[in-house]
Length: 74
Image (tube, rainbow, N blue to C red; front, top):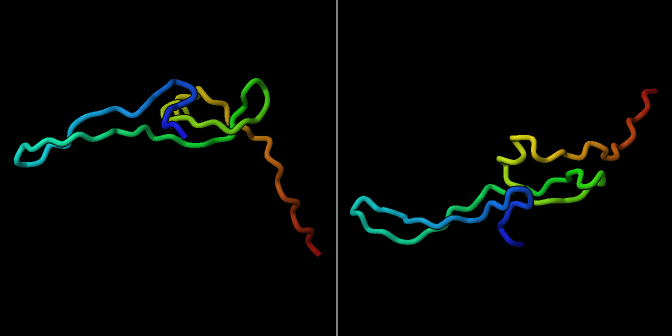
């Protein structure tokens, strides 16, 4: 699975770890991706999106999940 947001295209970024002695080594900054059931063209589909897209409302989450029946009270 590629670490890419399907909405905005956010990908891993590269930078440096910098120690107290100013030694540098390469590192990756990963996007915070979540797999959610969202409405795509009116149908529920599982998509991988970053949390900033979820928070900003760019993704409409699917709310039509089947709920288990409630037990009847005797």
